[in-house]
Image 1: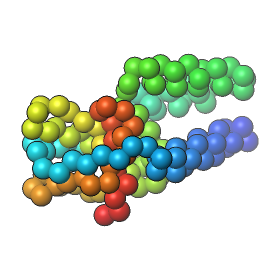
Image 2: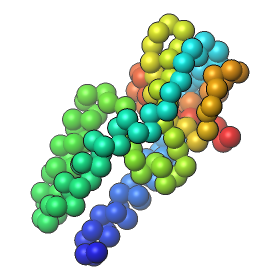
Image 3: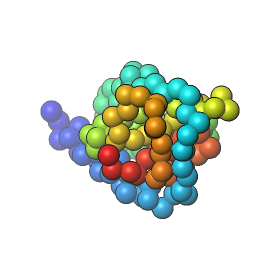
Length: 139
């Protein structure tokens, strides 16, 4: 593997770790009760992001790679997407679509291995946007 590819991978993992560390400064939220459905979202978004990853690997010029990365970041931020980051798998996170009793679907990033909604609650969520949260509770 070419050294620039290794550097790209190391930087990607490092930036994901920094994002997780910075999430501690986001606003606090809880979801206690009222959860009507939950489904794993791990596989839903992976093909799209793997596509971005392989396109990025084919770019040989660093300045082009940086501009493409900035454009993807801008589009993701302003579209209020779900902030699915496949590198979070390395840190033990899983992705869930949670439906609450009002019918609203929320995207929760958590280390919990959730198999049932019975007595399910999230007491240490951090709000990323109106529909996306990261769970800081250690299971």
